[in-house]
Length: 170
Ligand code: SF4
Ligand code: SF4
Image (cartoon, rainbow, N blue to C red; front, top):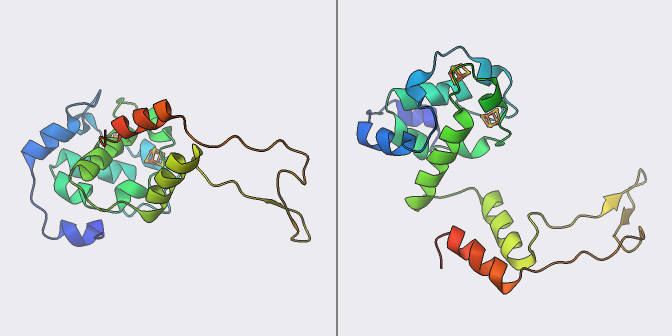
């Protein structure tokens, strides 16, 4: 996976791809004023190689292929703050989701952590593997030791089929 700033040195606008990416968005990046409000409240500010207003700007300029291939779109926490803060109702969040969908439909590499979540979800029905609680002395406690009922895990066949259909694997 390449860094976006590296890719930008050879970037060429791709208007056809831009049109496809923004087709499902309520408001496209062309409405962005570059006010920076999205970035000023971004949860993943420190992680993002390109900040939300820069991602929107790059999409507006047609550098969509570079965004689709970049790590930046996977570092977003999908918290929706940018969508709430935008005075123009341009949602960097929705744009990032659309870019992720394009990356997946192209079969591009996705971060290992997300693949792990998907596998855990399919195997157990839980998004994250259960962890033990740790006290101040570093002693770990499982659910049973804490008097909690055992977790119900596993997906029903129907739920698994629905998940596979969502993933396009059915
Ligand atoms: S808050 Fe909205 S208008 Fe302002 S830079 Fe972000 S996307 Fe653009
Ligand atoms: S949805 Fe992503 S880009 Fe928007 S504020 Fe949250 S972390 Fe930042």
